[in-house]
Image 1: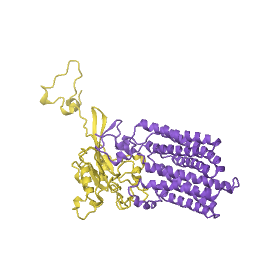
Image 2: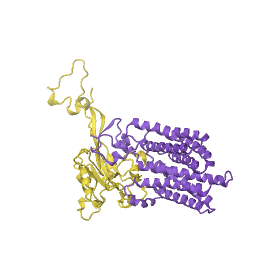
Image 3: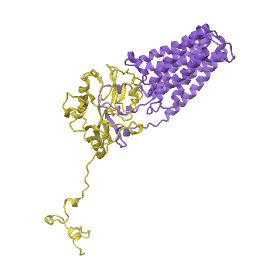
Image 4: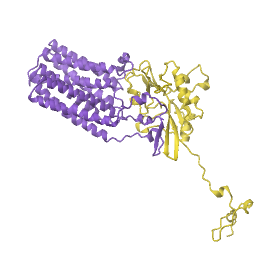
Length: 313
Length: 247
């Protein structure tokens, strides 16, 4: 598939925003369980919610750029009964509204923050599932059609969110930084495992569709001589990444380094010397790595329609 | 339940591209708006076509066959492009089974094109809406056309009658008979889309005949031409041997 940067930015931005919110709520839950003292509303929760909404809002705006008719985007909520994209179109604004109400509850010092936050957590998890299922539900995109797709979206979103939370806490709530760093390391390690599982699975895929099944001519040797046109078409632009195999391989190593190895080093270093700068750098590096990871995710899948578009005569 | 569809005969398609041009011509002049046609005379033309004819070579030289392969929306009975559309712009008509795009609702997200394994949906570059073969729904129900012209443009344009149009759920229709008698098959059956358009395979008409069916071995007209058997060779059996009971 051709990786569209608007969708890459959408999924990475909302993932970070969702993970950040989960980190904020984790602090609230820990305080409710008397493990820690509740951090201040106006010093911690409200700016945290604003940061989370900034990320999810930026992601939502980015997603409009991949539509041919963004002015009709409101229609996208219509087919929630059958379409995961439609369900995501409902889940994202619902989650953002719940997070906003959570922040508002903290600002106005209502006591319903725990309950509102719980609703937002449920919506957060629903949003992770909807986003992942958009890709996982297409059976013949075999690289994507696996529970690992949904798991990776959730785990990597949490990893980037908790890294962002540790940087945020270094500026706003020192006591929580080490806990957040620990969680970020845990999620990043888990993410490394699940993403590598996905890479391993994809390297072993046997594609079910062949030129024989695509044409219905069961001869062992079939070669396309002409795809019927000499220029380009939607089918030749949107389903192929347009780069060399070597480039694809290099992106894989780049994202493994930037999204996992380097942030783990920076986070590990920060366990002893808490520094807002280093933690911010860890988030920026991890986010860049996730952009590469998402690009690779899109580029790696092989659509069966490519069987029909191989040779310009 | 009616399911209108096309049957494409790969045995007679010569790859003339008449169906491609007539389809584009009809649909670009329709009420939905023009189809993209960029740089048609320059180096890198691009555009939107509902139907494309491709060419494949089957076999190893010199024993090859050139197969011309027209491809357009197969109007699947279980279309994967319909449930994924977030706005409901992609739908399958109940009355005749044609899968269509409601251009007013389409937001141009391209998800339905991802969901089509055959690559028959094209997002028009200019209109930014998904477009695909409509089975000429505006022709087949048109009162402005003569009854014999109420067929898809591609079916009317084909010079070798490689494209047949009809109801595949009606066992007596031309298309159902063609599928049944000539071994029609669907594309990519492994994905369970149950395409309505079927393809008829290449056929070779072969007659197995031996020399003595062409020239009778003991033809009285050719006794002087036919060489006598070599000494020691097994004598050729003649009709008289078979016809008489004596040794």
